[in-house]
Length: 251
Image 1 (cartoon, rainbow, N blue to C red):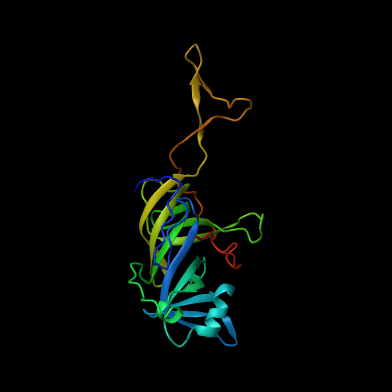
Image 2: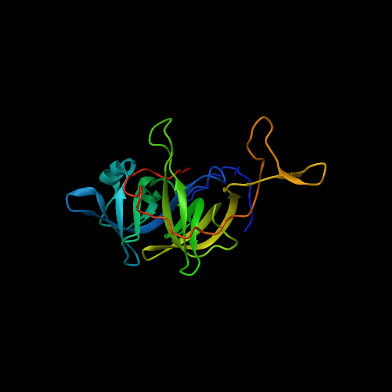
């Protein structure tokens, strides 16, 4: 695991999932191959039947709805760009269908690129807030864009299967994740930055005694980096703020 700088050069690619704008960009985005089956009488709500037979609860976001109505054959499988959610109760995985990658349908005059990104791949960036070592799972907090201009961002949590080393809590991570059934499993990850509180700096007096340093012009302690803390004793609840349709911060 290596630490990178906060700024990441923007690179245009022909892949469905673009590189993040910055190293500290929160996001949760992935690819699923499957056939979308709407609920009876409701196009925006339904189930995604993946190629391996898994059924995943799904909704179509408004920006994709017009395209689905006009140009997409729902009797066929498609490669969907999705935003994942997880819940405490079953089924564990729920997705928002945000786009479709099908150049042969949407741009028939252009040659279709060969993709390196494959179905069931997810790119997750956020703060690890809990890890259960014994059971092998962790929770990542993702920040969403404000719903209105000038509004405050809010957060949601993703539960991932897997294990990260070196006390990952309170650190910002970029994670490469694969779907297995209704679970999202961490394949690899990179620690980007520490997000926790920092210890006050100690400075010596003339007599050699140590005192906590003070910020100039105020009472706040001067802060220095420290290692991340262990996971909290109680796991966070995932259900809160899961039912709305706010989007993760995306590129």
